[in-house]
Length: 295
Ligand SMILES: Nc1ncnc2c1ncn2[C@@H]1O[C@H](COP(=O)(O)OP(=O)(O)OP(=O)(O)O)[C@@H](O)[C@H]1O
Ligand SMILES: [Mg+2]
Image (cartoon, rainbow, N blue to C red; front, side):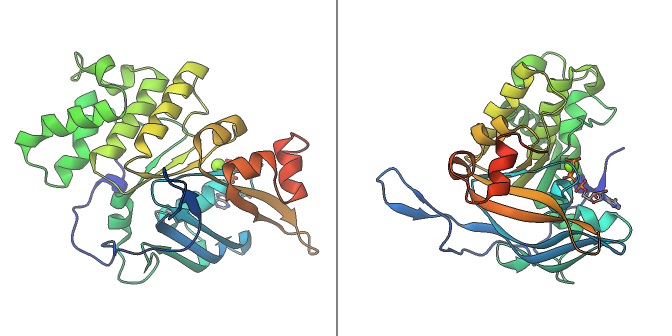
């Protein structure tokens, strides 16, 4: 069934982005000068708990506009948990709670006046397993815009544009009224990306979006991400290190540690430019992970 990430209309709110510039990280622009990337999310001293157990400890990082930020690390270290904090999906998990702050365009994402439904409209999510609604291809893409009040006369255009941007239009333009469930896995995943784009989000979160796909479909998704990066900010969790190295600008490496009480918790080991993480990491644990010594 449709989830509530798609469902609410937009109102002007606490989340309206304010122009702002931050100092780090910087990247070289075409002239070779340092251009300053705008911060979309700033995570500071974040601790996340499920009930009494702390699953992520003291995490600080930033996500920059029009970057692809990859989150990598061994199973169970808290990658999906962290990703879900960015659009408050963890709110839906009983017992989940966080300490510390996450700002989104300088607004405290967890402030009482912030509407989590509006958050999920601006910050869309694509899951590991493609989850199209049991509806036609057209209706999958049109669903969010319809609920958001897009006039009927504009829906065809929105559907086409979203499918084009998700690199699926050519494959489905003659069968828009057919069930989305009849598409291949890779096509279903691109449909879910089209559905996410159709409501014009600011950020797209992807949790292992290509892990169930064959190499060709995976390449398509990666090409698509590179294309989308021009207009969106993307955060992707992936187990595929080549994928992280190929597609992302910055990479966060998380791992799980055990404290002296025997409690297991996730930590951010290193967060840096992707090239640095994969060629010259600062931490031995990162090096061990990327060279396949554990995980
Ligand atoms: N809904 C939940 N309730 C309680 N504990 C949870 C819940 N979801 C995750 N956890 C626990 O939090 C920790 C981190 O889980 P998470 O799913 O974020 O890891 P992950 O890095 O995404 O792992 P994987 O690579 O296997 O997907 C794990 O110990 C997990 O058991
Ligand atoms: Mg996960």
